[in-house]
Amino acid sequence: MNYEDNSYSKGVFVCDEVTLKPDVFPKFQFGCGDSGGGDFGSASGVLGLAQGEQYSLISQTASKFKKKFSYCFPHNENTRGSLLFGEKAISASPSLKFTRLLNPSSGSVYFVELIGISVAKKRLNVSSSLFASPGTIIDSGTVITHLPTAAYEALRTAFQQEMLHCPSVSPPPQEKPLDTCYNLKGCGGRNIKLPEIVLHFVGEVDVSLHPSGILWANGDLTQACLAFARKSHPSHVTIIGNRQQVSLKVVYDIEGGRLGFGNDCKH
Image 1 (tube, rainbow, N blue to C red):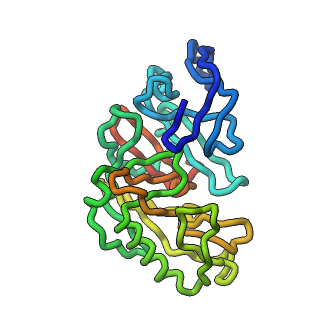
Image 2: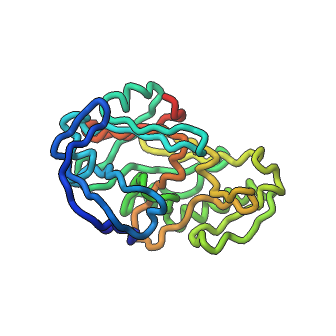
């Protein structure tokens, strides 16, 4: 199995009984990988959550879970996240705000309608059409958000204006797409109050990012970089990555054609 970021998993394709307590799925088909490469790191495997892929978990459990699921990525290793399937993915989150999924149940990725971005309560002066062609997807497998060049440059400029009190530093060479970095030790460290970044979706859904979804920082905070990048090519889709989803409850209701955001992993 090859992935678009050049990662791969190699092994044996098998069929077995899979249990997601308390539900049991006989004849579940999956890859049993014995070698792999790319950006998997020390992960034991890959959980397929695509909507249109025949062998994804979402497709193979659709009769039971009705293509509904949610997740929450914790902002640090001391905080618990969640992964829920079926009706409880939605019923456990009463404070959700829903935007629509574009072209639900077709293709493998999840298209959404991003219409704007705000920094420190100021809307960036960029047209919503920038995000519409060729479209915007939300992806749990991509780390940082990739924006059209004009949108990224507007975001970066607005963020820099709010961070003038922090000393800027060169980005670490291994983090190539990140180009706006600071030494947070020189401006408050872990107590720093970052400018709020809000993603605006159609349907009056405004998603405020957790501070961990704004900066990508090393352990001692001497290099903390804006966790956004420009798209490598105008023909590529805009991607909302998992870093920007940290501490958000993200709910997929594929048959209902909607995507929900909540601001608390606990509910």
